Image (tube, rainbow, N blue to C red; front, side, top):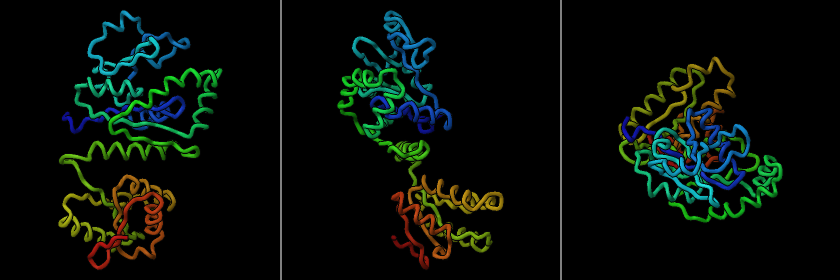
Length: 293
């Protein structure tokens, strides 16, 4: 497999209780990702703990090809290059990231993602999961100060208190895709084509005619038609489900072009509203000319 086709390694970091493990577990359960299980010299906090690989100091020192290393008050943590090359996600603190960027020589593109959330929510989460949440927060305060360590080009994502996990994942993975495919021969702008469908063959033909013309002019663009992707499914699902599929597709595109009799199309109007609410650029097609909104 070429380097271009390899998944990046996501270096996920953030203070205690911001949702790092929740994000990582969702990616593993729904995207087939795997996490790095780092080595540590600390003792397990409870019987059967599987968050790390627990080793003695002697065993730790014998590990070769360490690509991430952190010493927290005498307790050591690390991962090896072999582990990183065979996983997709590494939950790691900023000093570990700095070490990683200096030492790692593999072919996985590192992408730094900083997770954060409102402070009251963070404190409540830590309190809920610990026997003595306030004590845990106090113990973590000095460690959390290390998040003042500057990182190169991190992506910071703040999870709002009322946000669902799928919304957070969509935003994070949209950034990952742009970082992964934002350079080189795979760079393309994805244009979502908004056009009435209404199960009319003439509408399908119009879409195909527009895309054929646009492809000749904009060869670096990829035009995506939800009608061609999902049209055959519309009779088997509710209108609301069909529109949701379209909006999910729109959410990962870079821009939307609107054409046809969109003003009299409920679906097109919903797609325009979606773009407005999610800051997705959109433009209108009139008489063969694309005009900005």
